[in-house]
Image (cartoon, rainbow, N blue to C red; front, side, top):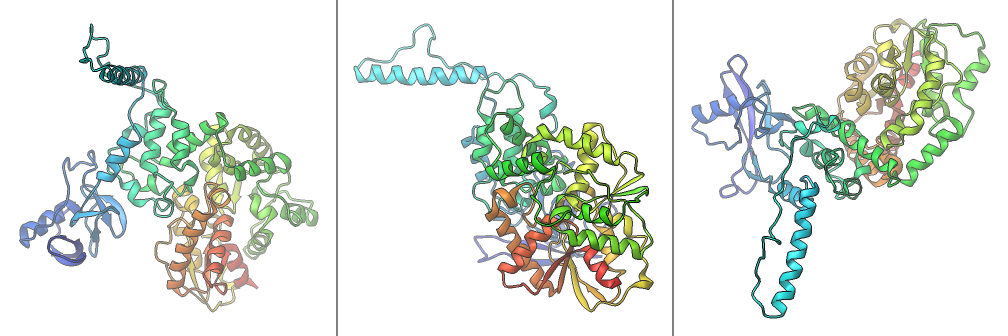
Length: 523
């Protein structure tokens, strides 16, 4: 037997939703739908929920299990599962009201605006004008030779490579329920609508001004967290498959990006880095100290560690030394290109890839210190014909730590999953394994450790209020954990979360890169 909880609510009988527990005799391969049917049949309950195809094709049975969006027909039921509806107004129990989304689709005219549609629209305008003229003269309206009849809207089939993936959506609305930005920005339509707009913007038959439409619906509000892709049963990542491409179109049409994003571009053109130097470059300092690097492992520092968080770079060198790992920190490396790719300014990326290829091609292994850099080198560089053997620093260290040399730390530590590390590279276990090897720390999981902090996708620079709102939510979660230190492996997360903690009066809680905590244990 297993125990599960279901959130129940009948507005005609209940003042507010309440949880009810049920014991279920689990069969092999029993999914959530099976469990709900079991409850109704064996407990004389009448839990309301949607289901149709039962094969993951219709999207009607989407709901939340343990606060994560799932299709009830695909998710296996497990002991202590908590089943709740999507984040929409509840009609009854697990059935939500989706009419607001449907109405928005109609208002936004999310259908093909082809030549036939435009002709139909023009005829309607002409017909309306003639009607007004005739009615004003008191003459009965007549159609002559079908001149004012509406043209039929004929939508031929499309096989456009750019829209192939986004056209596989099954309308489950999981992405809308999971998106963290929707809850913070009234301007952002959300991943479902951005996917919809992109489908038409990349369709050569569509005559609508879709790029302008996407900007009006919050094109630059998305943090690129990838949560939409994680929950989508069809693996549609609305950022990489739609929003990123829409941003590129906006740039090509000189409709975007935001001014703050243009500043990043200017900086890269000037220095090869996305941020201006404030202090001496970490790479310069290291190479001035050692001119005889001849190792097979190279460190890709990223812009922030090189120009802003040099302390993370120095911590890396100390940790590697304590563990007998020798590396090069090559001169001449430049921005990975992620800030340009995420904001649609792709024309400079080819040159950045070429320059980094020249620097790193002779190394057996490239190690990254930044989640965004690692995701870009692993996922985007192959699109430009360049493939390095890339490891995040946590992947390098997890099985190579000398714990005998550590001094115990008396700290409560929690961990924040950077989106581009967790969802972008599939790395979440390795950092936790490292933390559990550090002597003297009490590692506690925070609530929703993988929820976006708001730092990515150009949002920190371009839409700071969104970044601030998401950082506040993260700060609230950290406060509940009672942690002394928050560990992460992303300089952008590190900055934004610390800003959020400081603004919430939690300045005593420090955000550290995992390398800084390791260095502390070796001091």
